[in-house]
Length: 274
Ligand SMILES: *[C@@H]1O[C@H](CO)[C@@H](O)[C@H](O)[C@H]1NC(C)=O
Ligand SMILES: *[C@@H]1O[C@H](CO)[C@@H](O)[C@H](O)[C@H]1NC(C)=O
Ligand SMILES: *[C@@H]1O[C@H](CO)[C@@H](O)[C@H](O)[C@H]1NC(C)=O
Ligand SMILES: *[C@@H]1O[C@H](CO)[C@@H](O)[C@H](O)[C@H]1NC(C)=O
Ligand SMILES: *[C@@H]1O[C@H](CO)[C@@H](O)[C@H](O)[C@H]1NC(C)=O
Ligand SMILES: *[C@@H]1O[C@H](CO)[C@@H](O)[C@H](O)[C@H]1NC(C)=O
Image (cartoon, rainbow, N blue to C red; front, side, top):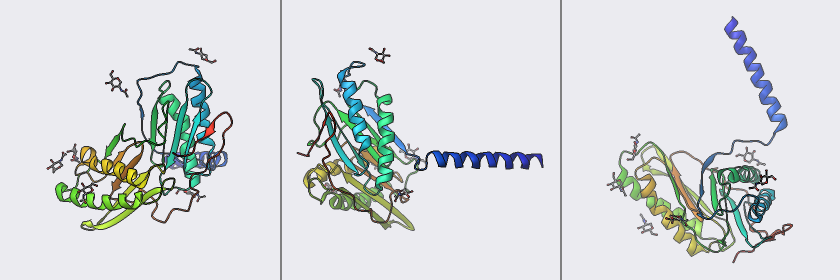
């Protein structure tokens, strides 16, 4: 009796809390953090122009809520800060924007004085640097993540997986420079009674051949991180691949989103892709 009353009242409190939270933050959803890397040996001084430029850059990235890929430059002192975000190809703009906002809030505390850093979430990633990287294919730093469970026939599984991954990568790399480069594949025959879900994506600034080259590296690295695993991902700054035995992306076709828009920013420049 007492126990059930306590449970009932805590349940009410929980519901009330949930309701208040829902009222205050109707759009709040969990953003799943994956990893970050502060990867330059170069650091900047606290309160320097670089720091305030980074702050401006991150807020300009966070304010672009109508696009799933964006790059920007801020340069008000001697240094220039380059930055971009990209969302996973299947997420909608609401989820994308929420992810980018959370990433811009977290990255400065993870990498307080780094001149170069990257942060990956399930739904987006974001990076900045003191060097121009908009037209480079960056395969480092890399991050690999494997599922703890393993398949029973690793050698034949990996062979078939590479084949599916290669086809997914071919598909992702097709669109022209500036267009979304994302593909997903679900295939049932690789392991009996199970479906493997594969994803490949490049930043839109890459050409089809650069994207395919980047994805080849990431696919090859599945051996490095995830040999024989039931799920794995390789994350590069310029492209990434992932596979799982469950659907980790939305299966329905993503809603069309605008391709690159160049939006002028106060005190900085939007940057066209070169
Ligand atoms: C940072 O410094 C270490 C040791 O000096 C060097 O091995 C490494 O390559 C440097 N990393 C970068 C990103 O410059
Ligand atoms: C940077 O600015 C903050 C706030 O104005 C101040 O508290 C801090 O002492 C400054 N740090 C340095 C190293 O100047
Ligand atoms: C965006 O996607 C999220 C997660 O799938 C979903 O909960 C939300 O309703 C979607 N929003 C819109 C406007 O479609
Ligand atoms: C799967 O394989 C990896 C690497 O060989 C190993 O570290 C891990 O413990 C294995 N997982 C299970 C559940 O046995
Ligand atoms: C996948 O592509 C890579 C290079 O693009 C190639 O070396 C490899 O043989 C291909 N694997 C399969 C199974 O098609
Ligand atoms: C991957 O796993 C297979 C089977 O367990 C093994 O033969 C092969 O050497 C492994 N490859 C790497 C790069 O560890």
